[in-house]
Amino acid sequence: MSLRARIATPEENGTGREDDHTVAVYRGKLLEEIDLAEMSSLAAGERRARLERVLGHIISREGPVLSTTQRSQLIRRVVDEALGLGVLEPLLEDASITEIMVNGPDAIFVERAGRVEQLPLRFASNDQLMQTIERIVSTVNRRVDESTPMVDARLPSGERVNVIIPPLSLTGATLTIRRFPRAYKLNELIRMGSLDEHMLMLLSSFVRARFNVIVSGGTGTGKTTLLNALSALIPDHERIITIEDSAELRLQQAHVISLESRPPNVEGKGQITIRDLVRNSLRMRPDRIIVGEVRGGETLDMLQAMSTGHDGSLATVHANSAEDALMRLQTLGSMSSVEIPFEALKDQINSAVDVVVQLTRFADGSRKITEIALLVSHGREQFKITTVSRFAAQPMGADRVVHGVYEHLPLPRRIAERLYLASEPIPPAFGVSDGAHELMTREAYG
Image 1 (cartoon, helix red, strand yellow):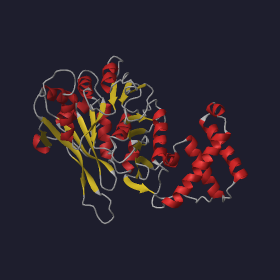
Image 2: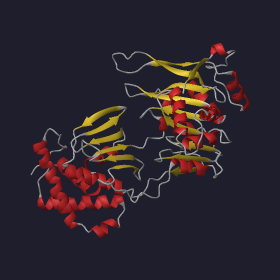
Image 3: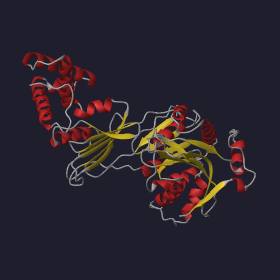
Image 4: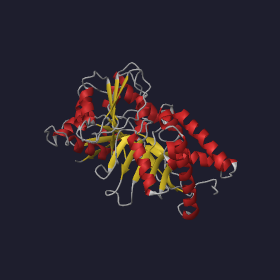
């Protein structure tokens, strides 16, 4: 039985099923010859090497006759099935892939460089896909079945995993793996076109001067990547507490405490929420608090922390504009168990938030800071936003690449004075306004 030197596409079901049968046969033979108790005592690398060696002997002894390439691929596929995640293993090793999306056994998509593409790969059957899913969720002590058809978890290696199966998913078992984003430095983001040097200088001054910064953006715009890069600007001697649903931030400072929420166990008990962690962090003497994403009642606790002695904190929120970010903070704050009038939340936000950094993902897959806005309203008045930097995009040309220029506007005098008192420079590209007419201020209505 021959094995082609690649994995069959969904359209090639005949020969593809033959390949899958070959893998299944040799996986069975491999499991018959190994000592599972002995294997469990080996480290992951040794376990894989042992399986590859045993399988190589089986193929030499029983056939089939294969070329070197075909033999290597057969060994790789069988060991991936026996030990790893099958067809997903090479995708997880591909550093260029940022997201893996499995829509049933016959449809596997990935995201590379901001673009989604379908791959000529598939699982042999729905049962094999479910076995892979069960293997993934079991590594984090979770289970997925009809009674628990939806799981959101983080793998020990850092990837975020979401699983949803029938009856909730009408298209079959669906698996989404979001790769852990590499920790980019701000200078790297400049080379990628996500911001320019003047914006970096301004953001650096804001962070060092202990402005409270909200990073806003839609799904996949790079909020966590930017948050991680901005956190590198925090002085090394400060005590930083990070709070996340799935730990992705990788801070390099010496004094960092990383907290991660915990979902309920299979009995529905033991849940620790972001709000629990935010409230507990206030008892840990933090200099700064960084929340990976506010999405519920913890928003009120975060706002109160920002306005009561924890200046210089950072958080992200899912929103499509700076105005939308403030409205969303107000809505999320109202979800707290604390009884607080909706209008009173304006006071909390106006006193807590200093800067909103808006991110946008463009049609060519690029991610850019499209606005840096300052919140200049007070008390319970309507939110007032002053834009100090923005990306002016040009119409997409024949190269299908988004071009544009970064524009920089004067800082309000009150903000400039605050930077001056903190001994932080004001980038010359911005300057300081002499009057309100120079400022791009607009109101955001709730």
